[in-house]
Amino acid sequence: MKLLLLFIASIIVNNFILSNFLGICPFIGVSKRLDSAVPMGLAVTFVMTMTAVITWIINHLILIKLNMPYLQYVAFILVIATLVQFVEMFLKKFVPGLYRAFGIYLPLITTNCAILGLALLEALKNYNFMESIVFGVGSGLGYTLSMAIMAGIREQMELSNIPKPFQGPAITLITAGILALAFMGFSGMISL
Amino acid sequence: MSSKKPAIYHFLKGFWEENPVFVQILGTCPTLAVTATAVNGIGMGLATTFVLILSCVVVSIIKNLIPNEVRIGVYTVIIAAFVTLADLFLKAYFPDLSKSLGPFVPLIVVNCIIFGRIEAFSAKNNAWLSFLDALGNGLGFTITLIIMGSIRELLGKGTWFGIPVLLSFYKPMLVMILPTGAFFTYGTLMAISNALKQKS
Image (cartoon, rainbow over all chains, first blue to last red; front, side, top):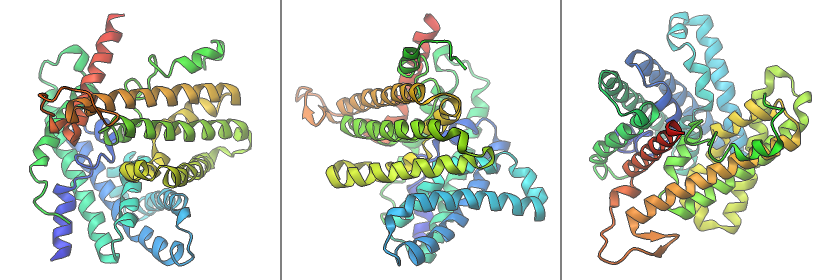
């Protein structure tokens, strides 16, 4: 039951983009069209889940055991960079269809702060192994959800007449603000 | 790239012409997340400037020793080392600030400003120019964060650096210190900066 609550909370209540401000760069850069936003979101979900598992193992079985948590940042970022590389090679070899669908988005994920943010939050909140996995999947799906909503809105916005200074990222930010206002309605629904 | 321009240009461009937040649109996550108060803005900006200067100078000194294929990995380790330094320093001397910045200090590791400046500038220029470039961009980032933090703190809490400045009949707009306010302030400021640039 607690896991289910955590799952729902990380999708909508503590949405990574709209309430934690993690992963904003791709959110503004790649949310122009629905058919690129959704694969990006799914690629993030995939890497997030893998990261949640591997960083939990490294953090609890190596860094904390050896009493050197100050190496967390260096270790986490190296794990993420390596992981993304491995996932890319694995998909290229065994699931070429998925590899083509993810395309350029996979290598871009290394510098997405949502991934490192996930690893850090997981260490900060001291989740156990199952909770970490659920947190990873939920956060990824939440990310995909807000990417998809944003892309849908931006596709519509292309047809409208926007004042010149607001064109480009400025109007995207304002729209994100309104979306965040809508998501604020969920806050307090589940408190963990 | 612009090696013929005077050295001072590399310092000044970060403030307005190539402001990392409004023009290059880098480092958006910390910009939105930590600017609920002006103090947080300063702390985050200075921490980022510190990491930016040291990483840029180190990279520009050892750039000929780094093999091209593994450069991203090397940069990452250098940045992560300096971020750990900054984080431990803040935790030791400014525990309150460190707590309110939360995971955003370690997240400087993946701040695109640092990667962007290293890739675009330090990997091609000498240590002195890299230092100026990093200092300019870092201070430009800090000033932008202070401006955003001040606006949000004034409207959202009626205070500035924790001191109440607006008269007591002013009712603070809570929404400004919530995520929504961050997006609105950033979007509006970006539009203003666009409008000023289009005029000139």
